[in-house]
Length: 125
Image 1 (cartoon, rainbow, N blue to C red):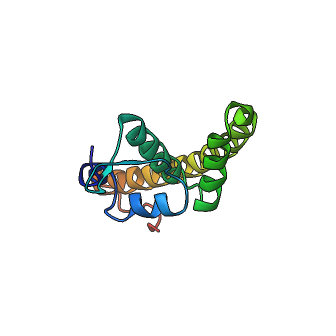
Image 2: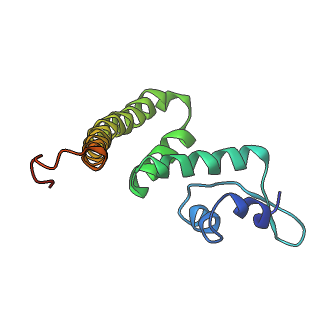
């Protein structure tokens, strides 16, 4: 897969910039010098994008990549890093669920008020 096809999974400049900072390594090139991505390269790029989607800052993604490239001895540290972001996402999910519940209750309140003939209810916030 060439760079144009690989970039369909991300922004046009991301792949090259990830290569420049060492997140993507050892990319083969054809005789014209064009990058040739393997299926494993694409899986790695998608994984990096998934880390980014967790809210993980680029510096921590770089740390993760260094751990990954250092070999299986780093698996406990990788688990620790991933677990910390999983815990952060769990807390964020709780906060978002509380907000969703609040909004759902307020919408239900308003819908009930609209459907009610009782005009003596308390003023709506």
